[in-house]
Image (tube, rainbow, N blue to C red):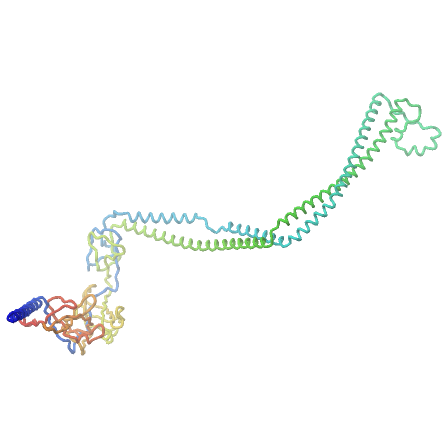
Length: 587
């Protein structure tokens, strides 16, 4: 029993010690945390009235000016002018160091040479408007189709062609033997006549030889002496007879044997010559009949051969199905050839358009390259930049040793007779009370007059803002680039959320404030800041009228708004409230 009481006492003491240690640690933790948490001042947004001036600030601009541009890539040796001094036309503004880097010019010349070479090559390239190959293919395909159609027609008439050819063969086979027999008979007749002619000519030649021998021996034919009893009876006949008959009819007077022989030879000669003439006539007639028979036989044999060829050709003809397939294939080939021609023509037309565009583009590139080279040569040989007109220097942005960039405006010259203007941004509600020709009050005394010349919506915020352009006049010099502030009027209005101007913070995303969110725990109160994006509706310098940017103005009533902090804050930071007017107080 005593041991149990002893143990219970030990447990109680342990619990008391643990609680004491926990309380001590909590005290020191809060103390350390309070030392590191930033102190802030805060107050609630209140309803109130703001009285403010509708003013705006703008930059003076010259209405007439001439920009002086750079010489690309050139290093400035010396700048001889400064802002707001007057120069005369032709005065040297900037001197340049000699150009040393010619790489850009060399590259531009090389590019131009490449373009010109490409243009020459394009001019020498033959055009692809020669379609003779496609047209030849079409003609060949058409010929093949014609042949296939002819073969199809022949295939359709194959049986008729075979019958006709066979009939012709039979006919000529039937007449050729008779023609051959006729020709052979006539040939035999001609040969017989030729043999007779040869024998007759041989005999005649022998007689002529004997006659010549006798005459060479001096033998002559006796002269003809008619008998007295015959003189009166035949006187009329003698006058009509020819001299040749008188020569060949010698008298019957007593003749020598040689003379008789000569007379007989002449008589036989006359007989043979008459016989030879008859033989030649008959032989020629037989030869004519032979030629005619041979011609008929040759014609019949040729016709027979032709008929046999026709028969073989007809038998070799394809079937109608094969011939039709050949026609279909030939037609497809012709269609492909026509398509190839159409495609080639379309391609040639497209290539012609592309080539024309390419040539046009190349010509433009050549012109641009030539212009660029001219500018580079001018810029590389340039030693100074002079004033293009008289006036006041303004906007000088270069100095000695600077390397100028392309199309850089290095300064502006404002002529002495230039007028000046300025643009202001006003709220649309303020601009409604303004009109062209109205004068605005200028806070800068050297400006004598600031008269409105134009009012138009601001491109950045056309609904809520207006740009008010004003013309300036002054008896003193007006310098562009300086700012002036003008006042349109004064206004006052009631707002739901008015806070000190110091509570509004600005960053790249816009205006915002921090609201303190309060929470309680056994260990004490906890304060955390929350960022709220706002729109500053109006300000009088000390106070600002704000509204929530998301349109939910109730979020501005969730807690007090931080007006001052000893350290920069971030969304979600823990803070502690502090009254800076009483350094000894804290919470």
